[in-house]
Amino acid sequence: SPDGGHDADQAKAATAKTAGETKAGGMLALDVDDDKRSKKTKRAIPTPNIPDPMPQNLAFMFTKISPEQKMYMWNIYTLIFVAECLNIVLYWAMLHYGPSIGISFGLATGIYGTIMICLCIQNVYILHDVIHGATFPPYEWQNYITHPFADFWSLPWMDIIMEHNRHHNSTFDLLNHGEFGWDPASWLYVLQEWTWEWYGWLTVPLVPFWHYIGASDTGCLFAILWWCKFPDAGPGGKCDKQFYKKWLPVRVKYVTWTTFLWSCVWLLGSLGMGKPLSDGWQFVSVVSCFCRSGFSAAWVFITNFNHSHWWNEFLASDPDRTWPRVHATMAFLLGGRHRWNEMLFHDV
Image (cartoon, rainbow, N blue to C red; front, side, top):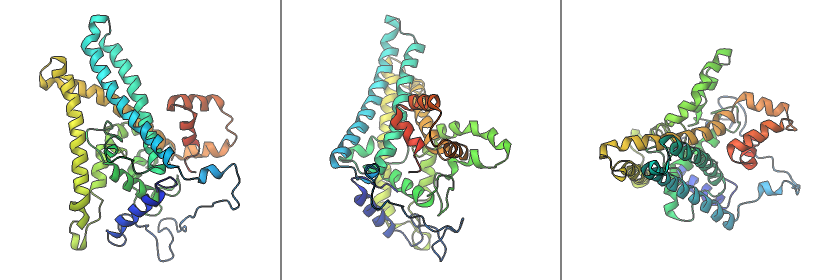
């Protein structure tokens, strides 16, 4: 679950409060038998194996993020959102004024697309960093800048927190999905794990497209999936009492915000370029295409690549990391060695 950071106690309290507002055995409960073991694997609930005494070279891994570090992380997060907005405006400017100075549509799109893909990849990584280390933003408005360009509408930040909590509550082991109950991320692995026969590889190339159309945590399809499951139904199948008080207003406000933001992109690409309002879809389509490509690329690595048997078997067979060119290439593609380290040690 989101843990280990400056907001660890706050995150746990929020989760406990939400769990207390739902019925027993609901969405946030572990699915175990009478012996407190997984119904799927019969394994007991894993407990952290924290070293005692703590070696100095490992102490940093168990140190909570300070308030200053939390502020820094959210400042970078805000910077990424601002950069994404400015990049869209830059693209508009290159399309509108570029022809007069020799900037073609292809060149403008290439510049915009390269920058946006890089920004969106970092957007996903810092989303994951923040949710585990600095879950709640310093300012309320920052709840709205976490991933609005991932799709035309998606889960608000509080829902992202809850579904990621559900993911970790049900999947403790990278390779054993849904061991302790329903995992909302399970459908992301179907195309690579529906069979262990050789022909299972035939559907693996479809994984990026599955993310692209909105199946990942920040996509519209995932939002529908989660909203159909959470919060749990109340007694007699009625709506949970918190649905109208808490969750519906949060969701309506966030979807209204993303609709407004994408409407601005539409207006920029239509009236802003001297075109009819109905032509805005062309600009929106290109802008969204590269945003989705960046988000999809990052989620493919964090979910499918990271949780794959092939990758984990490779890591187990190469503990000394004897493939320097592979690691250097992946670090370059993901934006630095610190990002690639998250792939190497995601289980930690």
